[in-house]
Every structure is written in C-alpha cells, then in structure tokens.
Length: 163
Length: 456
Image 1: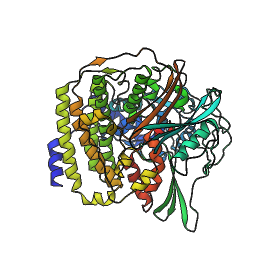
Image 2 (image 1 turned 90 degrees about the vertical axis):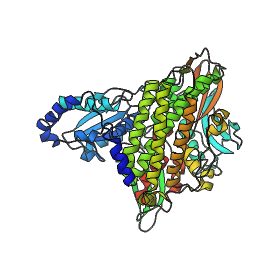
Image 3 (image 1 turned 60 degrees about the vertical axis):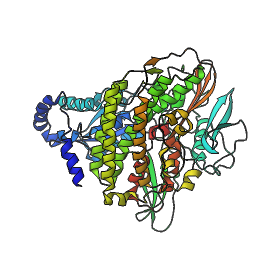
Image 4 (image 1 turned 180 degrees about the horizontal axis):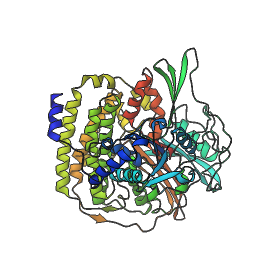
C-alpha cells in the first residue's frame, strides 16, 4: 500500500481545467440559486442506451475518470430511474427497446427532463422506430458521434442554463 | 473442427444455409446446404443461437433442433415477417400482440428466479439475464439479448461497397477498428489487390491501440466490481490518455473512419515515449495489484470456464485463451510473428485468469506497437469490385471477428458479421455454477462482451 501512496502523490492532481471551467463558477452559483429548490444542488442522471454502438456509453463512463471527474460538479449517474432527475438517452430507439425506454421514463419522478446524446448515422431500418423526440419530450440534444466527454459536460451545463 | 458461424442467405428465391468451420491448422471450410437443414446443436452447442437467428431471418426449420424459441423477435415483434428475405422491403413495422417468452428455468421447492435487465444499474448496454437461484447460489442463467437489434444486415444490403463503411464501423464502438479492418480486407479481396505493407502496419497499430484501451478499461473495471475502486481511477486515466493518442493519430477517439487504405503520419518520438511510460505504468500496476490479497480472494476460482467446455462451445478470444485455448487470429499470420507477437494463455479459466491474461496481452501489444510504428505514409484507392463471396477474420479486442460479404452486380447482396461476443455470450452460463449472484457482475465484466456487436 505504501507504494500506492508514493505513486499517488507523485502523480498529483489529474483533473483538467476545461476551457469553460471559468464559466463553471458562475454556473455553480446558478445551480445553487435557481436549481437548488428542484435539485438540492445535485443533479442525478439515469443513462439509458436504446441501440447505440456503445461509444456514447464509453464516453459517459470516461466522464468519471480523473481527467474529467464529473462528480465535482455535483452531477451523478444513478442506478435507477427512480433516483433520477434527467433521463439521458443514447442511440437510435430500436423496436425492441422502445417499450422499455418508455417504461424507464414513466419511473422518473416529476419534474423530469429528457436529454438525448449522439447523432447515430445508422438511422433507417424497419427495426428502428425513429427519433427519440417523437416519443418523449426531449429538452436538449448533445451533438456528436460520439460526443466527447467535454462536449457532454458542456451540453449538460448548457441544458441547466436553459431550464 | 471448430464452428465459426452459421447463417442463411437467399439466392434466386431459394434459401441456403452456410456453415463456416475452422480446422486445427487454420483452414476455413464452408458447408453449403439448400434443403433438409439439420441442426448442429447436439455437436456444437453454440449452433443454437445461429439456428434460432436463421429461423427468425428466413423462417426455415432445422431437423433435430430442441430450442425453437425466437431469438431477436421479442414479445411484441411480428412473428410472421422474415426480415432477411428479399421480398421483405418494409421500412416500418407495427407492434403485434404480446406473446410471452418462455425462459429456461429450474423449478422446485425454494428455487426462485431473478430477472435482471434490460436496463441495468450502471452505464451499460441493454440485455436481459434470467437467473434461477437457490438462496444466493446460481443454479442457472439464461442470457437474452437483441434489445439493440438494428437490422444492420438489412441496412447494408443494396449499398455500394464503399458506402457501407460508415454503417459497419458503427456496429460496435469498442471494436470499431476491428470491423473496419475486416471489411477493408474484404474490399481488398474483391478488388484483387494485395495489402500494402505500410498500410498494414498502420492498421495493425490502430488495432493494437484499440485492444490496449479495451484491456486497460477492463483492468480497472474488474477490481472495481470487486470493490477496489482505486484500480479503476488508475486504469481509466491511462485509457483516457491512450484515447487521446488515438484521436491525435486518426482524428476520432474511437478511430471512426480511419481504416480506408491510407497510412497517416504520426509523431513517432512522442508516441514511443508515451509507450515507454505506459509500459512502466502497467508493470507498476501489476506489482501493486498483486499485493492486494483481499482482491485476489474475489478473483481466484470465481466464474471458472473449464477448458473442455470452452472447446465444446467453440470459444474464441480472451474467454477462450483464459481457459487454455490457442485461438488467436494473429497467431495464424506470419506478419505478427515478425513484430514480436507471442500467444498469451492462462489455464485456470477463472476471473483471475482473464485479468492476468489482459495484463500480459497489454504488455505484448505495447511491444508490437513499438515495431509497428515504423511505416511511411501511403494511400491507395479502390477501383471496381468484382462479384463474389468473401470472408475475413480479424482479432478484435474481444476475440475472433468473422465477416462474410456477398457482392452481386456491384452492390452488397448479403452482409453477415459474427462478433466474438455472439459465441461467448452462449458460454457465459457455464461460468455460473458454484457462484453466488453477487459475483455475476464481476464474471460478466471479466469477459467484457459486446451487446451491440452480437445484436447487430
């Protein structure tokens, strides 16, 4: 274990200052003032994949690595839709997944929002039921195929400003 | 002979079933049947999913088949349509009446079932696992997937060979480069071109980066699932650095659009330097993690896949090699031997074996990358593809990927991809006996199979 702590102090802090980190300070204040009543200063996200290629999920997992460390902003990925404020949906809404996606949305306590992630180029097929915004009220869309971790953070902050 | 894949295709309104086998010396054998289809599931248990898929695709029955349940046609999927028949051209289908799916389950006093998924507690793809439990012990597991069924085979049909790249590289994001490489190999065959040595080096370099990223992520997630989060912080940091290198070389963090018959320049010195540091880090990680007995207590003897079972289930990739099999596409290519490829194996077949195998393969990948980086930039272009049937094998980060393409009148007539996960998912239940349900996430993560790749 001593070796671990030696390495740990040798490495130092890895979390980066993203170019919009300065904005973060203001947004944190916004988070505190405007959203405090709704989110109690923390935002819980439930991620549901409805037919993506797994790249969007990999980028969302990357958000918790030491370089981005999303939790420093008080944004968490939670294990159940019932704990969540936001449903983050990636992928193309496949025929087999649509009923389960709608079910997950039902389980979110109100007030709730839907944010979509990624622009899949695989769009047209009989087994794809079309855009998510046709079946769910989508509040925000994060662009990219796949969106990079910093795009996702920026998108989430943008979304928080809007509501 | 090992079963590689079994799939159907329509030719002049008749359905044919192709079975692809591989002999011990690496020779590929195709068996083509056009009538009296017989089930292979008694000899090759993994034939079950292939046959269920062909039944869903074309509506043909197999003699002697003991599992006739639909595979990707879920409860409300219309059972009367056969999507891969040429006559089926609908762009939209409607939900039909709910028909319950009969799960494999064990019945008895005190035996109960646990249903998990398709939406899991984490950032993960959708899939369903049905456990039969006796208290904490798992009696049986049935894996049920295909929630992400996008009908890739049908999407690609009718496309010009070069147009299909964009769809094929997005079948599975974790293996995108392997899919591109396999399809690129097919295009080379179809245009009767030899592989350019420089481009081959460049492509193999990218493939090894992809494999290394995948291994590093798993090396973090496996201990994390056993409650040791520090490993995840360390490994996810390394995989992030490597993803950035991949972006620097290809312009995409997943290598989308990078295997197209072109070798781009890289900053060799910087990458060699980076690889040196990464090698030291992985070696440090190995020493550090070896020193934590409470972790190995969870990894050792958990989720054992015995060698004879791995052989019976035609296992490939990390799952097969951790159980002592010698299946690796790279070992059949002299090019890889020249650059220092050594086939890595473990014998015990448990989570610890898969974990140790990943460390060994990661270190071997770094060795190869140091030699692969020696190439000069080149570009080739394709002109015209001749009709015919082609197949290609590539070792992805999960295992042996097989792609079959039939080109007819200049467009793709049939595309089929057998992801290594399609085989390994079927062997997953064998790892469950004697384990408790709390160890399932650990076992599942140690195999780290793709859902999107096997769902298609």
